[in-house]
Length: 194
Image 1 (cartoon, rainbow, N blue to C red):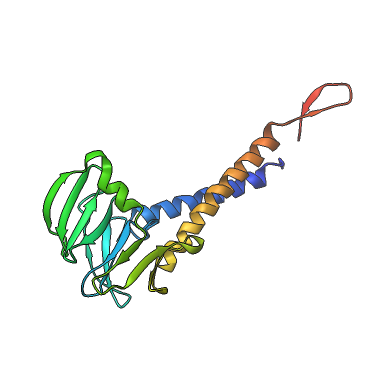
Image 2: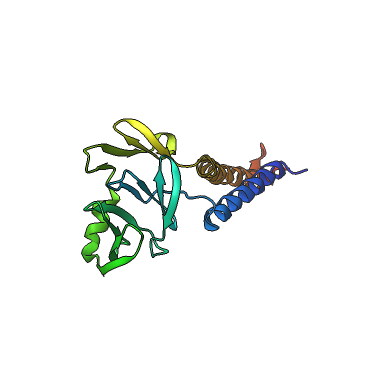
């Protein structure tokens, strides 16, 4: 048996895990990123995920809103009744049910860039909300108390994806090194390693 076969097998296993993670993400079962968050005047938390904005009340999803785009987006709530959503090329103003009120170009991606870096939100009652990602698990805090974190499955799949990509690259590098490296004898000839 060649020395590189076990590393090649490990690389294949990591490749299968990586494929499975991408499949879960593309099928909408998990979301790898949070597209922003906001709170309306009733205290409902809006969390942007890939393909939807989840509306949560007391930690439970009460409905979802389509972001009207398959592209990356960011959003916030303005005037406590309007969703401002940007895809970097278009800015949508929507009511809290997701109905588009206006649509205009995002000149120079100005709105997108402002919203992309927004990690805090203050509601009409003065409560301060912040978004943090300790250990890569995105959470929303209200006045320092965690009120939301991404689902456990999303977090596990995200970690598995990172591990499978890094592990696959390491296994591939070791396989290539063992397969293609040469050994030099004392008289200067090179022979292939077995």
